[in-house]
Length: 246
Image 1 (cartoon, helix red, strand yellow):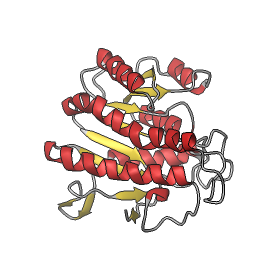
Image 2: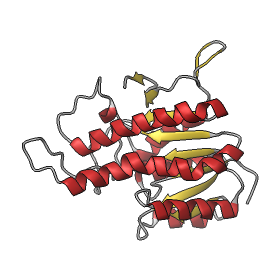
Image 3: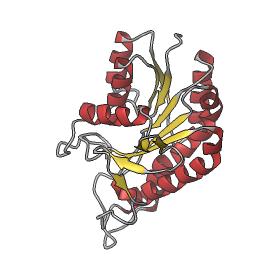
């Protein structure tokens, strides 16, 4: 493969993940795109257009075996990864209140994908990231994970999973920042995507537009002011650049 910068993107079959993959390719990156939906055609079509820079790898972030297999597949093609983008996420099709039945299996599935999945990816790809120039881990979170500011009074599984994700990223930051790793924790807004399994047509943002804003934040350095670098402070920002409290 080329000596271009290398990114790994999870949940790349459609929606925001597909948009992120397309934007990175436009910017000249080599991309390993994690695919969970074998019958979804967009990634295959994109691969045909970009056979030298796009590598589609089977990847289910809810499975230890799948994540480890994906890391081995990437390692066979490259000796480094510059940016890991943890985008894969799910939610229930219908929000449930405390007055409705909370299906334990459903809650645990959401938690496994949204909170544990990114930790699996981080653990599996640390060696390749350590060898890269970026050493950057990016995580798609949500306002739903903000204890101080989230307005939600339902969607228990999704909210809890994003709060847990944020705390997991804080642990990664505390452990890996001294090695030079950098982190992006990002709330992309209400995107017209398939997170609940069906296309959300009511979202405020088109997936490709949301992806352009996300990639811009993921790739640029962060500064609090002239000469003051922000990398030593973990923050969650949204698509407008606003900081969200934990």
